[in-house]
Length: 155
Length: 276
Image (cartoon, rainbow over all chains, first blue to last red; front, side, top):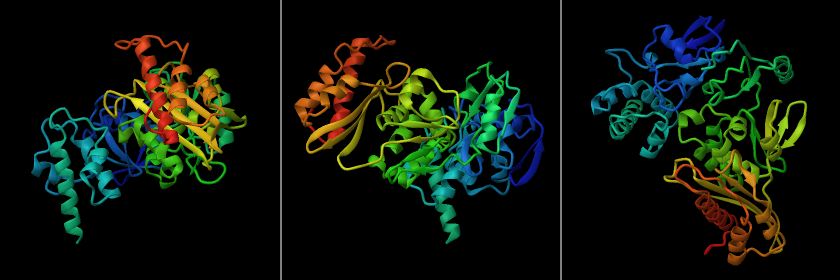
C-alpha cells in the first residue's frame, strides 16, 4: 500500500508495482494530467512531487510513499482559476491544449522558486514541455503575465 | 514500462539496500529512473530505490570534493558550490546532459555518469576530473574501469579532483545547435607547475560507447610548456592512429577531424591560450 498526499488529500493506493504515477492518476480518472510519450520527453504529464516538476510517466507510483503530489486539478477550479490559468486564457496561450497541464505545473514550480522571473527563466522552466501548436511565444507571455499579477496581488 | 517488474524495494539503510540487491539476480538499483523505467528491459524483476538514503549531498570545496550519487542534475545546475567549482563546469555539463528541466529534476548524478553512454557530457567531464566511484561495501573504483568492466554494487558518491593552484579544465563540443547532442566532445583537465604540464587528463566523448581518455595526447603534453604550438601538436599527433567508425551521415574521418578540433578547443580553454 502506498500513501501519499494528492493535491492536499491523503490517498492510499494499492497499484501494480510497474505502474507509473501517470498511469495511476489516469486509472483513478484524474485525467487532467495528459498521457504523452511515456519517455519523459514531452512534458505533457508533468506534475509536482514534493514541489519539483517531474514527468509523472517516469515516476513509479510505489515510489511516492510519504510524498506530496500536485496535479493540475489542484491548481484551480472553474470559476476560481489560478492566476496562471487565467493568464493562459487571457493571453490565448492554448490551442489544442494537450500540453497545457504540463506547462502550468512546470510554470507553477518556477513561480514558487522565482516569483519575478525573466523571460529566460520562463523559457528554461518550460524546457521539457513540448508544444506543437503555439511556438511558446504565448505561453511565455502568459507566465510572465501571471507572475506580474501575482506580484501585484501580493503588494 | 517494465513489464516483468515484480518487486519494488524502498530500503531504509544502505546495508538493507545491499542485501536486497544481492539476494535477487534480477534486481537493479533505481535512482531517478529516467533510463531504466523506459528501457523495456524484461530482465529487471526488482528495483531497489536508493533515493531515500540521503546520498544526495554535494561537497565541492576542500580536499575531497564529491557528488552524492542521488543528487539530481538540476541540483548541479543550481547549487552555488557546484557553480563555483572549476568555473562551474559541472553545472554546465549537467545542463547540457539534458536540455529538459523536467528530466534534470529527476535524473541522478550516478545514473547519468554510469548510464549515459556515448552522449554523456557529465560522464566525460567527470572522467577528466579523475572521478572515482565510492561503491557500498567495495571501496572506491575508477570510472574508466567501470566504463569498461561494468559495476554491480551501489554507488554512494563520486569523488573528484580538488581544485588547486595551476589546475584548470575546459571542454569543447561540436553540435548542430547548442542544446542538441554533441557530434564530438572533448574535455581537458591540466595541471601546470612552474610553467610545465605536470599532469593532464584529456577525454574524448560522444564517440564510441563511453568517454575515453586520450593518453597519447596526455603524453605529448607531459613536461612541456603549454603554448599554441604544443596544443596544435597534441591535437594532431595525439590522435594519429585513432580509428573512428562511420555514423549515419558522418564519416569516421570527419568525426576524427571534429575530435581534433574539440581537443584543441578544450586545451585552449583549459590553458587560456588562444590562437589555436
